[in-house]
Length: 190
Image 1: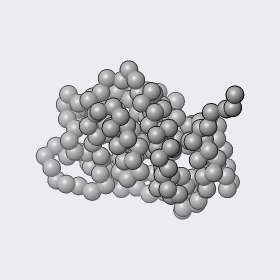
Image 2: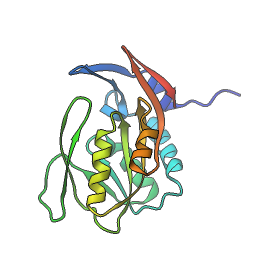
Image 3: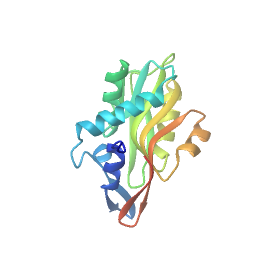
Image 4: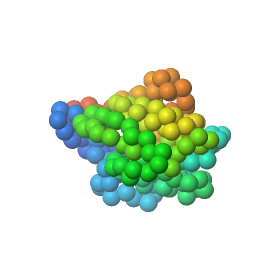
């Protein structure tokens, strides 16, 4: 009996590394859209995220544009929950919550709309790197009046999920953990 193929592990093993402003990050279909997002990879990740989120009681899925959108859309279709995208531009809608964020190589503002008191949200995203964006998003969702019931990411770069879980006080699950070492991606767990 052969070992089951793990499309996520395979895609991570084949991921390239790039440097931007001295920050090293991986190039992956689900974090960058290149190379192309293969249906079997998206299906595999969706199955695993849905299983990881079982037991969470939420009424909305939230993600951050842009690369969280493909994964969160697939999970929303599977679970039947509405999807809210936190955008990188303001709409000026009533109740909009601006959130400052930084990543390893950029920063700016995000804008939360369509979230308010009584909402119980699950955050679904592509990657957890520094934790700065996640921290800002969770605090912004709380300012909007929502209860964050959990965070599910595909890739944890650097093993920060446990640290973020303790800091934010909500479950933070990651399907895979990687480390970027020189010019290659080391898959710790997938």
